[in-house]
Image (cartoon, rainbow over all chains, first blue to last red; front, side, top):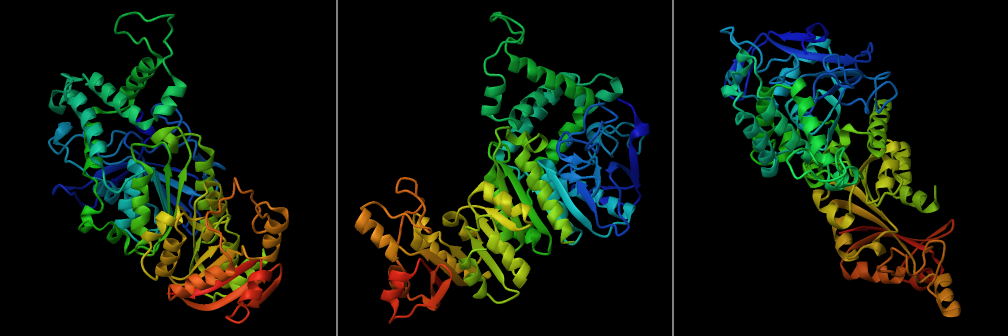
Length: 371
Length: 198
């Protein structure tokens, strides 16, 4: 897992005051870029990743040796065309792929663990804003991301209203619902119930709470899929056996699939990061930052919004995406919206869903032509 | 572009903010954007049509006029257009009220059930009329509340809605409708176009 030579890092010298009250400085943000910045510097797209994503958006992720998390959408001639656009993505703070997080050492030279400050979506985007200065970009062409990436998109344009021409939140929400928080809490409880977690100090003992993290991932993974999608893919099919074994092995393919998803996840993700990032999502309530009026979050921006949801996404359902559209319309903002038909659940934005990819491509390319 | 759209476009001054309700594939929106520098938005219920609008670079919201107009503030558009859709709503009166709340003015077009070909079709064939503007069979038509130019004219007046302009269209001929020629226009026009304000 240690391939630090492949990780580009920006050290942010400027102090950043976090929502929790603490201030961090001289901290690293790990990032990756794709395509090239043109001479006018008007073709940059900042992509924000979701809970378990990282800066390796497309191509082969040098750490996991697997395809980047948004390979369907980003790349040469793809929806976010890297022949045309300069794509920047960074690992969120609190993450575990190079950006400042709980697996880093604190000022006392000890690994932070749960002594890392609790971070918010607001902190994440304020940290990432430093990338604009780093690349000398005055205004981004677009910001986009799905799920928690979409939350960062909304927070970013609220904090920096004139820093992006277009804004594309996907399969997201402006406020984490009770159900969202409940699922995240289930995951956190699974991690902290693992005896290897040791109040977050596991790294010093070199034993990870892998079982807890795997259960967290399994539970979360179910929320990313739809009932119909699961039924069609797995149904009641048995796993490499003719009949039920009357035991607690993985009799069903779905069990085996989830166990596999859990096991590969622990190889690439840090349990404490999982706690921190899910917490940041749960704390996200953009309307609350503006006394309950979501429209106020966007009152100062002239950006062009395009909001996308998916029919079978029950984690961040269409209505929650539409609430953002409504807030924008009520202040006369330039906002388009489409709900894409898909039975692939919340994960639709990561998958090969042609209507989604063509809508994304058309919106970007047409908006860029008008640039 | 069909003549109806040309007539609608002629009713709108340059540089205005316009909402096209039921904008379909965005043909009229694109024309208004490119030729009159209109700040144009669309509302469309069909996912396929929404995709076509996006491919044209138009700002469109997937939604249902009967539910989704309420998110727009009062008088937030100079004009709101509703082309040949009023008769397809469950509650056309409510939609009309919403159009006039959201728009400073509204342009509403209706396929005229009083058109002579429609009347002749029912009178002589004895089956539900099918014409160029009413192409569907009775069992698959989206139209729930057909009306005539005369019906709409009276309806609007009864609601104290101001009519700035009412036009009768027949293929490429456009003429003005007034109180004295209403009966004739109701017989010979295929389509009625009304510019109204609450």
